[in-house]
Length: 314
Image 1 (cartoon, rainbow, N blue to C red):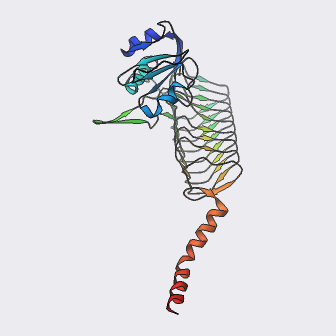
Image 2 (spheres, one colour):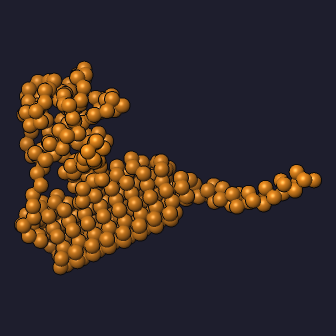
Image 3 (cartoon, rainbow, N blue to C red):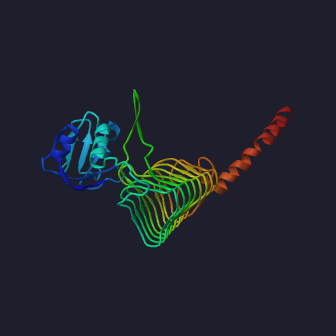
């Protein structure tokens, strides 16, 4: 998330009530998660396992819970609870704005676009030309939709990320202030849910086609002309490269990549990144021919045991 205007390190420290290391006027352009953070932005880290990764990331400002050596050209914000303070900054720079009507006054809707009854369109939404938005679609604040997009009834774009920190009193959510971006010529079926990014974008690229009842997690990127069948569940921070096909009820773990033109057959579970240009099946998903051979051989085990017993008796 980029701020509407450049801030400085001292101002950010005052907002969250922490000390800082670096020049008071060190420029701060925004804040982001570590996998998408850019120069001039804040990233947070609250576990020693990830200190080095955060300190050596693209981030210029590291919100951290330990007084460490500051990398050259960067700045630190020293906090007793970086997760809490990251949320404080999210709320400060992107406060929740309650809706006052079914379609926000500042929503921009292109020529030739049809909005069917019952659709909710939030603040700062942009919808391109010649789209069809069917009844009872919910489009949360900040969503961007391109041209010639079709979205079927009951789909929800921009709900919060499923991202929590476990505390003694319960689960503390990481506040979502990112967006959903739908590019041109995308088709989205009925009753789908596409979560917004925590601080960045969840992106569905040009020409992708998504069936009914598909869930796409926060900060995930769906590539050009992908085909995703019903009841697929894609976790957060996944990269689906171009022209990938996911058949029905495929599920993935978070933070993986599925390569260009890969095909994942129905009811498979993807637990690690997959190379492009191959067909996969099963859990964990493996190349389909090998997986089917394994399944065929497994069925032969009872007969093989019977033969072994006969040999032992003889």
